[in-house]
Length: 610
Image (tube, rainbow, N blue to C red; front, side, top):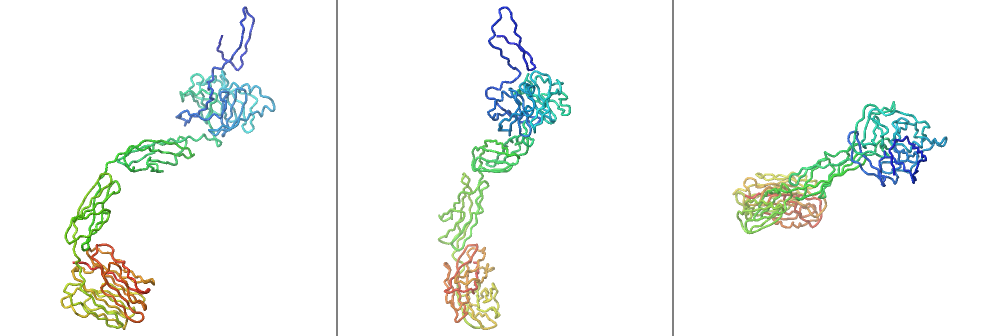
């Protein structure tokens, strides 16, 4: 077998002559060596380029097309124009992923068959379009040619023109694929595969200036074209996600600062922290529930809907912080209440609370109460546990007393008069507290309290008047008469109560008055805030009704006085007390009458112990 290398203009002429011992010729094969073998796969690759940096070559679907037979191509507004080794010139749509069906461009052939053009197409080694001209190079020829071309009508010019011969740095006989941008021409060398660039002058239709190698990858190809979408833009390039993270204990701060989009902007971020937690910020923070290694995923989306994703393992360790135990204690008589809501844990919720009361008693929970068997001062202990091995304990003293406030007696008058006289119990001693409660059935008459008494509360409605007075008893008060006067005869209830063991400075720590607004049998006293431990709560109801004769007291209250007048519009009253009570919100007790009425006055009075 004999082989010879030659440079052809596209036609190879063979001459055979007779010689002695003429050999037998079984076949002649002409092979082009200036084209890259694409292999059986007819592979198509795409590469991102921003004018400075090339991305990685990536395979893309070839559409089932035999690209090894292609001879140059270019794109205009989403349409790919390409030549073939059989001399045909076609166009098809291409969206960057999917190739449409090919349509032959042969409009001019309908007038005069363009044999020269189709012969050239089979030899094309590079092709591009600019300013109404279809530029191309032919294998082995050192010229850049062009024909006029109208894409709208599909007419290729019948005449071929020479745009230029070889220029500095550009040997058109060595072109193996080319394309242009607005100001540059790029071509792949059939010698080394490098991609080179020169300035391009559309006005003169030729490269200008010197050439520069922009990539040393092997760019030799049957088809090398610049993608252009239907609106004249390149395909969207997917963004790249990058995860940055710093952690302190279980707390991590993330950054997407290294994420980029080569042809636009990143418009959204989606984080998955690997423990079910998510976020959409560019630089979020997240706390993990426990130590361990988690896979963090960041997905970024660009302004064209392209996405990029990155994952990174994050390992966190936990140094447990010690909780702090803190509580308050309040005692009323022999019962003490404790509250540990002031306890805290800097790195999570507390898991448990354990109480000891100093007498063998125990309890759990944020709050608890304990009743002592006898009086005394006890050490109450609290231990909190954070569930991660951290504990803290603290103690406080609690003093349990038997009831220091003692009921000494009462007197009551329920009548239809203008002078309401009651008697101070004979057991009263100097320093005791006297309470005088008054309710009538008519708000018009003027009510005048006894001399030497202090007004504590006033209540009134469109149907009633109500008053509460107090007095610190002297030695002369026992058995004395106390009188409330009204400016006219009225039906009213007057109740006097006496207590010992009360505070010498603030015997009445707090009080409140209320009036009924709804027709019903159940009437509720107003609530009152008390800061006193061991207090006794005095509750009073005075209802105006022609039907009511009695009231049922609330559970837990001791009745000290009750009465019901006579006739229509009479007053039915109920007075009682409860305690000792811990500090907090007191009152809100409900007494139930044996008939309904919307006319009732109620008082809540907190008696402070000594």
